[in-house]
Amino acid sequence: MRGEKIEALRDVSFTIDKGELVSVLGPSGCGKTTLCKVIAGLIKPDSGRVIVEGEIVKGPSPERVMVFQEYLLLPWRTVLGNVELGLEIKGVPKDARRRKALEYIKLVGLEGFEDKYPKELSGGMKQRVGIARALAVEPKIIIMDEPFAAVDAMTRTLLQMELLRIWSKTRKTILLVTHSIDEALMLSKKIIVLTKRPGRVKRIIHIDLPYPRDPFNYKLQNIRKELWKLIEEELVGEAYGRKISCSIPY
Ligand SMILES: Nc1ncnc2c1ncn2[C@@H]1O[C@H](COP(=O)(O)OP(=O)(O)OP(=O)(O)O)[C@@H](O)[C@H]1O
Ligand SMILES: [Mg+2]
Image (cartoon, rainbow, N blue to C red; front, side):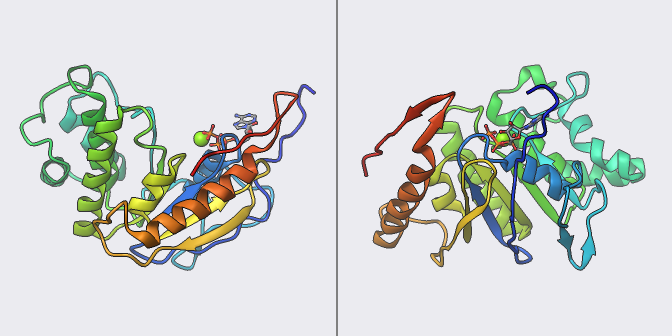
């Protein structure tokens, strides 16, 4: 009905340790983006709270930045200008923000592209700019909402490895929302599996395997099976008014 409120999330509770790379996995529409926005302080939850290092989140802050699927780069700004954006908003003086921006441009592998405009970059490069922009403000937590969903499969694998490299250098706390079980398996210390809408925490899976991970590692294979099962259970049900059921081979 028009104007009716949709409950996106319910009873979602979990903790993320400092410096941890955690994934949120769940079916489409279960509230993952909503959860990101709540953590970023862009949406106020009807109840409950988000606490970052002892402080209750009351609104957006450069301490919690989001990286979006659609890059959200300013087309009239160069790579350097885009990476400097958050630092400008933070009020960092010109020389210092240039230095910092160049440092993170280098870290994400875009040295030499500082003066290019977004239209001159590939999707993967645009996302690197988004990651550099997020890192440059040196936030406490980076919230990535399906950051690699818009790039091709090969670039996605490359960016996943890049993210691991950047994470191991910076040890930032990263919350990564993904639809991809394999992405979550290769990258996360912890996977938070949500149910379909309203999203609730269905299972939290810890993966104590070193990086880089072998996708064929037997422990990872077992977790992959478990994850498929958990997701499969959520995909069985109503879809657009029709009853559906499905079986995913594994
Ligand atoms: N701006 C909005 N206005 C009204 N309802 C919304 C809005 N954004 C999201 N919703 C509702 O909240 C639910 C959760 O949406 P959300 O975007 O958080 O899901 P998601 O898990 O990120 O989905 P996806 O995997 O497709 O990105 C959706 O089912 C949708 O019906
Ligand atoms: Mg989403």
